[in-house]
Image (cartoon, rainbow, N blue to C red; front, side, top):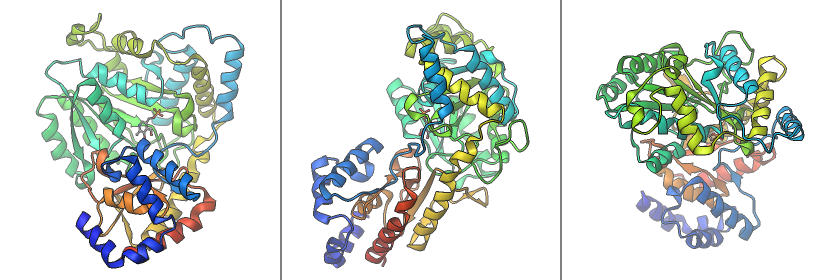
Amino acid sequence: MKDVLENTLLETSSDIRINTPIDYNIVKQKIAESKLPCVGKASIREIRSLINAIEKASGKKFIRMEMGVPGLPASEIGINAEIEALKKGIANLYPEIEGIPELKREISRFVKLFLDIDVQEKSCIPCTGSTSGSFVTFLTLARTNKEKDTVLFLDPGFPVHKMQLRVLGIKQDNIDVYKFRGEKLLEVLEEKLKAGNISCLLYSNPNNPSWICFTEKELKIIGELCQKYDVIPIEDLAYFNMDFRKDYSKPGKEPHQPSVSKYCKNYMILVSGSKIFSYAGQRIGCIVISDSLFNRDYPDLTRFYSSSNFGHTMIYGSAYTVSAGVTHSTQYAFAALLKAVNDGELDFIKEVKVYGERAKKMKKMFLENGFRIVYDHDDGDPIADGFYFTVAYEGYTGEDLVEQLLYYGISAISLSNTGSLRKEGIRACVSLVMDSQLPELEERLKLFHENHKN
Ligand SMILES: Cc1ncc(COP(=O)(O)O)c(C=O)c1O
């Protein structure tokens, strides 16, 4: 693929070098200075600092699609609740590790009203962002059974989860679901689970980076196989209810976002305040453990913890050792936000829908300029428009494409570190792209296509 790129450069090099929105030499120089062995393989944070350097040197703004951060202001309800709690004097007090009662109550109500599942308040615990929730979860689940030493990802996925397992020294395996949607998932998943070494599996829904959403049929397959092979599914709902094709916004009313929790007894759900409430800076989320799993005993846990009880260990073994509780004031913010949503006073879907509308416009621009969507369907139906989408351009790998787009003032990440087998893909995040930048994006994509089409 590098050869293709070199040849393209030789044939049309003068055009490309003169005719790029960002000065060719500045981009080249900043790439060299970054010392990155391969820009396309760089992590999100490395790409971010490279773009910052190019923007500074060139004086030109990029269309920033590399990082999945909220592009909306944080919800006022949360900020006010947090200020009020601080003024009441909670800052000097250690919060209970299991979470403040107000928050536990609202989490339990939230999953009842929006997923139609019954989980006792005791089994709903806060975490310092869903990232810490998955860390604590992996840490505990990987120690429940000494025969089960591996975590399975249904990919593509969030690169940090993979990094967490490397840091924790836990083995990982994956299935890229690209070719295994619908019924096809059953065989490939059963093959992995029946080996007996998988403790838990994780997927996000809607999915980062591809925005595919598992269908009810697929979640039934996952749940039933997990039940059969005693594997714990971890449903990462960082983008809770953000499949805008259906109206999931009414508390206690059908339809509800499909969930694995309908199809097995032992499951975990991770919810994040970062995207649904644009509250990423305050690092808040929660772990929902099914009652059956919470109450379960795993004798192997006593190799590391004082108790064999799963719920007790999650709280007083893992969450305690990692952070000894979650920021006190932020718990009040999350409780107030969830309460407003549960009471029907805050429609967070209405607020974040703007991402879907923007994705629709941006995807159209990519498609009109020679790109195609990589993960493009949900078991036959076109995928939803949301926070992310994946694109490819004929003749380029995702890694090459990330680098080439830098000359056009467009930043993204390649799919190579997401567990995807689609070497051609890149992930675009819509959240930081301003509506006012859309005409510029279109112009840049047109020029890219002019310079790169065969
Ligand atoms: C799929 C997925 N899971 C988890 C997270 C982490 O969320 P938090 O900010 O709550 O740690 C993200 C953030 O981008 C994500 O995309």
